[in-house]
Image 1 (tube, one colour):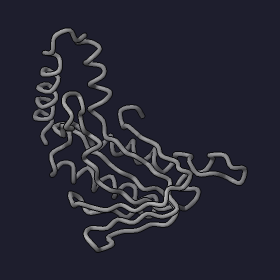
Image 2: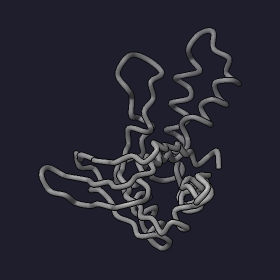
Image 3: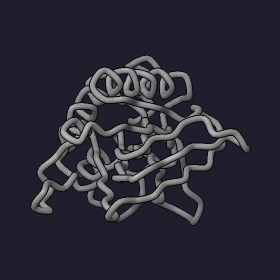
Length: 185
Protein backbone atom coordinates (compact mmCIF):
# COMPACT_ATOMS: atom_id res chain seq x y z
CA UNK A 1 0.00 0.00 0.00
CA UNK A 2 1.53 3.28 -1.05
CA UNK A 3 1.10 6.20 1.32
CA UNK A 4 -0.64 8.14 -1.45
CA UNK A 5 -3.15 5.35 -2.07
CA UNK A 6 -3.90 5.01 1.68
CA UNK A 7 -4.44 8.75 1.95
CA UNK A 8 -6.82 8.66 -1.05
CA UNK A 9 -8.77 5.71 0.43
CA UNK A 10 -9.18 7.46 3.78
CA UNK A 11 -10.26 10.69 2.07
CA UNK A 12 -12.88 8.85 -0.01
CA UNK A 13 -14.32 7.17 3.08
CA UNK A 14 -14.41 10.41 5.03
CA UNK A 15 -16.15 12.23 2.17
CA UNK A 16 -18.89 9.61 2.08
CA UNK A 17 -19.46 9.98 5.82
CA UNK A 18 -19.41 13.78 5.73
CA UNK A 19 -21.88 13.89 2.81
CA UNK A 20 -24.71 12.72 5.09
CA UNK A 21 -27.08 15.60 5.99
CA UNK A 22 -27.13 16.97 9.52
CA UNK A 23 -23.74 15.67 10.62
CA UNK A 24 -21.17 17.93 12.26
CA UNK A 25 -18.09 17.54 10.05
CA UNK A 26 -15.55 18.59 12.71
CA UNK A 27 -16.89 16.06 15.21
CA UNK A 28 -16.98 13.30 12.60
CA UNK A 29 -13.45 14.06 11.45
CA UNK A 30 -12.19 13.65 15.02
CA UNK A 31 -14.19 10.44 15.52
CA UNK A 32 -12.94 9.07 12.21
CA UNK A 33 -9.31 9.80 13.03
CA UNK A 34 -9.53 8.14 16.44
CA UNK A 35 -11.71 5.14 15.57
CA UNK A 36 -10.59 4.00 12.16
CA UNK A 37 -6.96 4.82 11.59
CA UNK A 38 -5.27 2.68 14.18
CA UNK A 39 -3.84 -0.78 14.50
CA UNK A 40 -5.87 -2.68 17.07
CA UNK A 41 -4.91 -5.48 19.43
CA UNK A 42 -7.14 -7.41 21.78
CA UNK A 43 -5.04 -8.92 24.57
CA UNK A 44 -6.43 -11.82 26.56
CA UNK A 45 -4.49 -13.03 29.57
CA UNK A 46 -4.51 -16.81 29.32
CA UNK A 47 -3.46 -19.92 31.18
CA UNK A 48 -3.25 -21.57 27.76
CA UNK A 49 -4.22 -20.95 24.15
CA UNK A 50 -4.19 -23.01 20.96
CA UNK A 51 -4.90 -22.27 17.31
CA UNK A 52 -6.25 -24.85 14.89
CA UNK A 53 -6.61 -24.73 11.13
CA UNK A 54 -9.02 -27.51 10.31
CA UNK A 55 -8.08 -30.40 12.58
CA UNK A 56 -4.41 -29.40 12.79
CA UNK A 57 -3.01 -27.57 15.81
CA UNK A 58 -0.71 -24.90 14.38
CA UNK A 59 0.37 -23.13 17.58
CA UNK A 60 -0.07 -23.25 21.33
CA UNK A 61 1.14 -21.45 24.44
CA UNK A 62 0.90 -21.85 28.18
CA UNK A 63 0.73 -18.79 30.47
CA UNK A 64 0.80 -15.55 28.55
CA UNK A 65 -1.23 -13.47 26.14
CA UNK A 66 -3.50 -14.41 23.28
CA UNK A 67 -3.34 -11.41 20.93
CA UNK A 68 -5.87 -10.69 18.19
CA UNK A 69 -4.24 -8.17 15.82
CA UNK A 70 -6.18 -6.00 13.36
CA UNK A 71 -4.22 -4.07 10.73
CA UNK A 72 -6.22 -1.14 9.35
CA UNK A 73 -5.67 1.14 6.35
CA UNK A 74 -2.77 3.49 6.90
CA UNK A 75 -1.10 1.55 9.72
CA UNK A 76 2.68 1.83 9.77
CA UNK A 77 5.79 0.34 11.29
CA UNK A 78 5.50 2.99 14.00
CA UNK A 79 2.13 1.53 15.04
CA UNK A 80 3.79 -1.90 15.31
CA UNK A 81 6.59 -0.48 17.45
CA UNK A 82 4.19 1.24 19.86
CA UNK A 83 1.96 -1.81 20.24
CA UNK A 84 4.84 -4.22 20.84
CA UNK A 85 6.32 -1.96 23.53
CA UNK A 86 2.97 -1.68 25.27
CA UNK A 87 2.19 -5.41 25.03
CA UNK A 88 5.43 -6.63 26.60
CA UNK A 89 5.44 -4.01 29.37
CA UNK A 90 1.73 -3.86 30.23
CA UNK A 91 1.33 -4.87 33.88
CA UNK A 92 -1.69 -7.19 33.79
CA UNK A 93 -0.29 -10.17 35.68
CA UNK A 94 -0.70 -10.38 39.43
CA UNK A 95 2.15 -10.25 41.90
CA UNK A 96 2.20 -12.06 45.26
CA UNK A 97 -0.23 -9.48 46.67
CA UNK A 98 -2.77 -10.01 43.93
CA UNK A 99 -2.08 -6.62 42.30
CA UNK A 100 -1.46 -6.06 38.60
CA UNK A 101 2.25 -5.35 38.90
CA UNK A 102 3.86 -7.84 36.53
CA UNK A 103 4.29 -7.71 32.77
CA UNK A 104 4.58 -10.47 30.20
CA UNK A 105 8.36 -10.07 30.47
CA UNK A 106 8.25 -10.35 34.27
CA UNK A 107 6.27 -13.61 34.26
CA UNK A 108 8.33 -15.01 31.37
CA UNK A 109 5.06 -15.55 29.52
CA UNK A 110 4.44 -16.44 25.91
CA UNK A 111 2.41 -14.74 23.19
CA UNK A 112 0.11 -16.21 20.56
CA UNK A 113 -0.71 -13.74 17.78
CA UNK A 114 -3.73 -14.24 15.53
CA UNK A 115 -4.53 -11.96 12.58
CA UNK A 116 -8.02 -10.50 12.89
CA UNK A 117 -9.05 -8.09 10.13
CA UNK A 118 -12.57 -7.91 11.58
CA UNK A 119 -11.23 -5.59 14.32
CA UNK A 120 -11.17 -2.92 11.59
CA UNK A 121 -14.89 -3.29 10.87
CA UNK A 122 -17.12 -0.28 10.42
CA UNK A 123 -20.68 -0.69 11.67
CA UNK A 124 -21.70 2.81 10.67
CA UNK A 125 -24.57 1.79 8.42
CA UNK A 126 -26.75 -1.23 7.98
CA UNK A 127 -26.45 -4.52 9.80
CA UNK A 128 -23.53 -6.01 7.95
CA UNK A 129 -20.04 -4.87 8.93
CA UNK A 130 -17.94 -3.16 6.30
CA UNK A 131 -14.28 -4.14 6.13
CA UNK A 132 -13.15 -1.46 3.68
CA UNK A 133 -10.88 -0.01 6.37
CA UNK A 134 -9.01 -3.29 6.85
CA UNK A 135 -5.63 -3.04 5.18
CA UNK A 136 -5.06 -4.87 1.88
CA UNK A 137 -3.86 -8.44 2.54
CA UNK A 138 -0.26 -8.00 1.30
CA UNK A 139 0.40 -4.94 3.45
CA UNK A 140 -1.55 -6.39 6.40
CA UNK A 141 0.55 -9.57 6.25
CA UNK A 142 3.74 -7.49 6.15
CA UNK A 143 2.80 -5.54 9.29
CA UNK A 144 1.44 -8.66 11.03
CA UNK A 145 4.72 -10.49 10.40
CA UNK A 146 6.69 -7.45 11.60
CA UNK A 147 4.62 -7.38 14.80
CA UNK A 148 5.31 -11.10 15.39
CA UNK A 149 9.03 -10.63 14.64
CA UNK A 150 9.45 -7.67 17.00
CA UNK A 151 7.44 -9.34 19.73
CA UNK A 152 9.50 -12.53 19.39
CA UNK A 153 12.67 -10.51 20.01
CA UNK A 154 11.41 -10.01 23.58
CA UNK A 155 9.18 -12.97 24.46
CA UNK A 156 8.53 -16.46 23.04
CA UNK A 157 5.96 -15.80 20.30
CA UNK A 158 3.81 -18.11 18.20
CA UNK A 159 1.28 -17.28 15.52
CA UNK A 160 -1.78 -18.45 13.68
CA UNK A 161 -1.95 -18.74 9.90
CA UNK A 162 -2.51 -15.36 8.26
CA UNK A 163 -5.74 -15.29 6.27
CA UNK A 164 -6.84 -18.80 7.27
CA UNK A 165 -10.10 -19.74 8.92
CA UNK A 166 -8.96 -20.65 12.43
CA UNK A 167 -10.35 -21.96 15.68
CA UNK A 168 -8.80 -20.24 18.68
CA UNK A 169 -9.13 -22.11 21.98
CA UNK A 170 -8.26 -20.17 25.10
CA UNK A 171 -8.39 -20.69 28.81
CA UNK A 172 -8.91 -17.06 29.78
CA UNK A 173 -7.28 -16.23 33.10
CA UNK A 174 -9.28 -13.77 35.17
CA UNK A 175 -10.75 -13.02 32.74
CA UNK A 176 -8.51 -10.12 31.79
CA UNK A 177 -9.08 -8.65 28.34
CA UNK A 178 -7.51 -5.37 27.22
CA UNK A 179 -8.13 -3.55 23.94
CA UNK A 180 -5.20 -1.52 22.58
CA UNK A 181 -5.38 1.08 19.85
CA UNK A 182 -2.03 2.26 18.45
CA UNK A 183 -3.21 5.86 18.02
CA UNK A 184 -4.07 6.11 21.71
CA UNK A 185 -0.60 5.06 22.90
